[in-house]
Length: 83
Image (cartoon, rainbow, N blue to C red; front, side, top):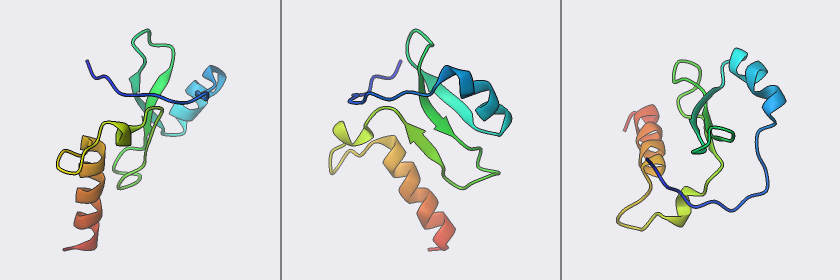
């Protein structure tokens, strides 16, 4: 179980979830009750790093202990730059 901090009033309209999934969007995390989509992403075959979250990973990040999402984003940028 993963716990993140939230501060929002928005959510994915359930009427569009099936259409979005058919278009290639992957909902890779949901709320504990399964009703809210918490993370949406495109597979790496379609985009090197496209990820949207309902939570705020920056709230729990620290300079020497960043969120895994930030670490992976930086790694992907570095890999794409060839450095």
